[in-house]
Image (cartoon, rainbow, N blue to C red; front, side, top):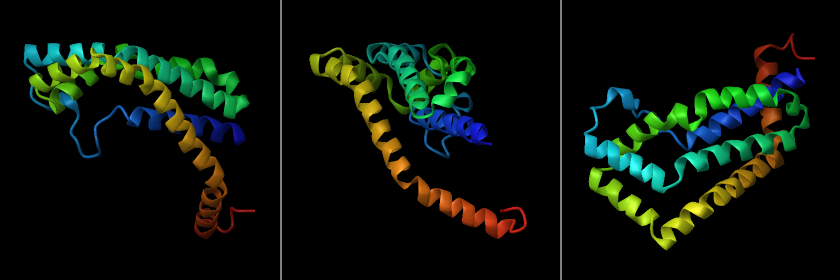
Length: 170
């Protein structure tokens, strides 16, 4: 059972990391939106390239997996399966088209070009270079806060389960 919760937690954290890359709740999938113009598609692709999206996604996935294994050494045994799963569904090749659609539908072609231009400036490059470290540090803060308050969640879940199935809880 402990192994089940470790894997479930890892998958939940994987989903949380991916959540930052998705549209807000209630936003329709990109596939249901109007087709992109060639210029808008090109501008979105240029922005994603200028912002090192592929490299940052890959590094974020690697850091997230390493962090999970560090916190739960028992997960080392399932790292290849987790990595294969994540690479299949969350790698740049799997997500690029969705990301192009997302950015192209959220920004005008002009805005996309301005953002790409910004990311090519010294402060834009610094922003891109620092963003993975900032995201990793933010995730560590969030994980630490979750760990600090995990007993409260565990107690709430145990109480809920006990109330729902009093005969099953020992």
